[in-house]
Image (cartoon, rainbow, N blue to C red; front, top):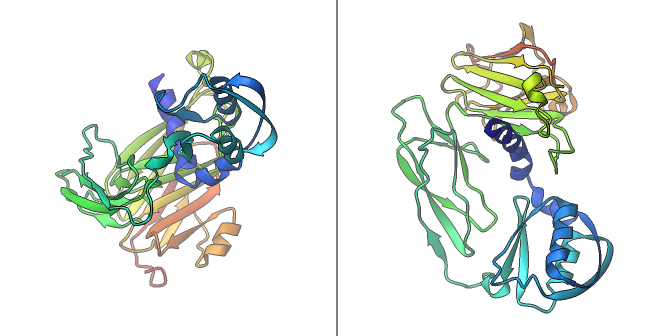
Length: 336
């Protein structure tokens, strides 16, 4: 069960990390309550949006009676009406609605704050994070653990800036920041399409972020998430094996008979040194695009992002065992 939960969490990460907040606030809800407890109103909002509610019962009086008769209004408008006249406000982050005191909101000119701490990779996981949970914080100390392997580096998830292990770095942050760092060998699958509820929606595009400085493997597991049919083979394991080197190979093998709903594959391969010479899928060379727009319009191809120092490969999912090979054997003078 843990494997099933982990897989769905990893796929949902693609949604959480790429701008969910704005679209979340614009979700439509309808509320029809007359002199009803706040607890029931919140339960209805949670049911309609699929979001979690985070608050202290010392702040939110769930027994307070309210009347709310709203039809197809934005979530932001509904929450504003619900909290009208009391000393509370809200924030929507990471598919959660946080209820906080208004006085806790930082004011212009307020004294700068700094939070320090250590985030250690004690479980050997490739993704290091440092969530910001206090308003007014402007910097965060993140410890990147020593690895004992000279080939291992850490990369900023958003900018791909490179950091050596065994050091503490200071990261500029605000309350909406989620500093994340990718460790060499990371294989991070994310949903390419927007998903609100994995119980009712399927992943149709798989975005896989990887940093192939060292060999690594990862298995994405999927089933219906509801029944025990996985015991009868109704599951799908997507085994991803990365072999690092001048010819970096990404091998996909499949196990199980559960439906593969992924139609498109997008590989995001961190490689700061240089662009590849060529890319092949099962021995067939993939078209190379020098212009981002043309790459985005194509169904199949590869592009080297100068800003992210990343090889980006896209192709229709063959839904069978296959290999993607990225050759760094010869410098691409244009892509350097």
